Length: 176
Image 1: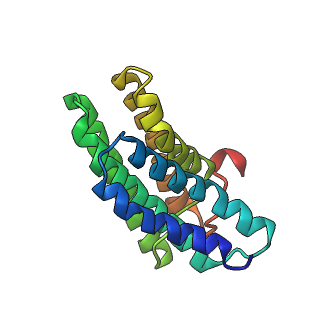
Image 2: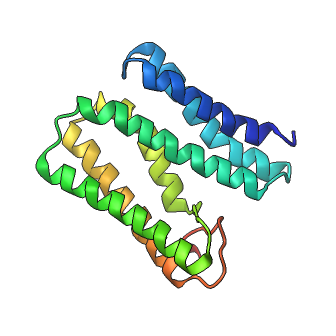
Image 3: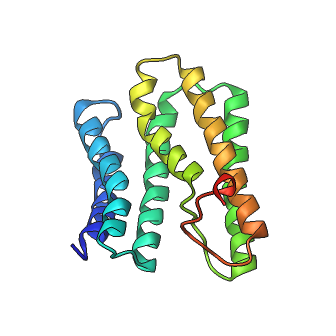
């Protein structure tokens, strides 16, 4: 069990290759997408349950999360007719995430990827995006995602700017 969580995170990285090659929303894409999402949901709980949490595993998981998000956005966003305000908001969110990373690096001399509840909720909401995309109006789904991302990344900025000690498993500012 010692290596299972890291193997799941690594598997998620491997699954990004077919996600880049397959057509979004087709059955094969969705199956691989769901498998990748499930690995994200279970790797952390398995690591905690069997007390095999490591810095390497946390970094691998967070890196796989970021790459998963970028691949999904890269593959799906071109298929969506984004309104100008959505594009501006997405750019602002990207700047917020970059700012959070820069602040974390300046303050703590290392790249910090927090596992707050807000970040986990954002990744989960992004995971559900293709499902809701086909069931609801696009503007509603995207707006909800943008609000969640804004809250998560604003919290990241605040935590990175104010924390004295780095706790990658920080629950969030509402749970201190």
